[in-house]
Image (cartoon, rainbow, N blue to C red; front, top):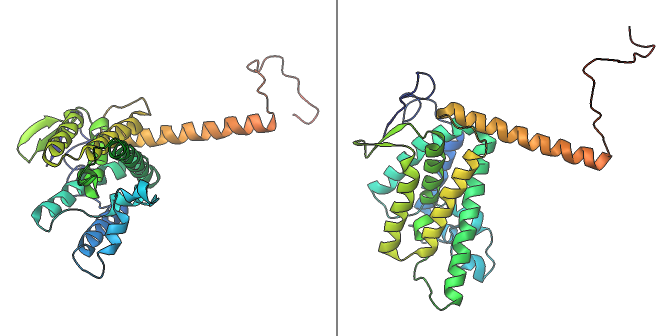
Length: 269
């Protein structure tokens, strides 16, 4: 899976998205955690660890609330080439998002979208269960690397609407369409598994990621846009802190006269 940006060189091109280039330690650590927790599933002595960390109905039935935050970091699936391919695709998208948002907002994106998606899925499952329509295997569509793929692909597609991504390394598709494709693939998964809470969770993750990146209100494409998003979010947060400080301390802003009629004190030369 590669991408091509029709814009000027240096904005976002072939060298930015893919396997080559710098490998952020945070992204490598994330992949390592997914691989380790995935491996723990297949040993009797350690299978309890991923079982407690992945998202299950116990999150609302028994109060296992930590699962709302831990499930994205638990590798899920069957041993085989597909799991490794998912990690490869995850690396390519996560790397670009990290280089654009940097560490703080990268992890905020993961937690904001991951926890929000888990809440939407758990509420849906609870409602179905209480209504007498239990789901046999809930949340399978959104476990581990699957929810992370939804988050990072949506973030990338939102910031790089005009970039061309070669789906399966062959089919050229504009990045903007990947948001709709994620929902379509999740729906296909729902038809196969009947995991409606998982479908709701994936849809929520895509929407929350889209909203997080769009919050800057200025998206022109590429890694530069993600950096602008990070800076504008930080500027908004600092302004909110200043506003709260002014209200708390009773500060009042007095309009200036642009230097006219300024009364100088005796200490001013």
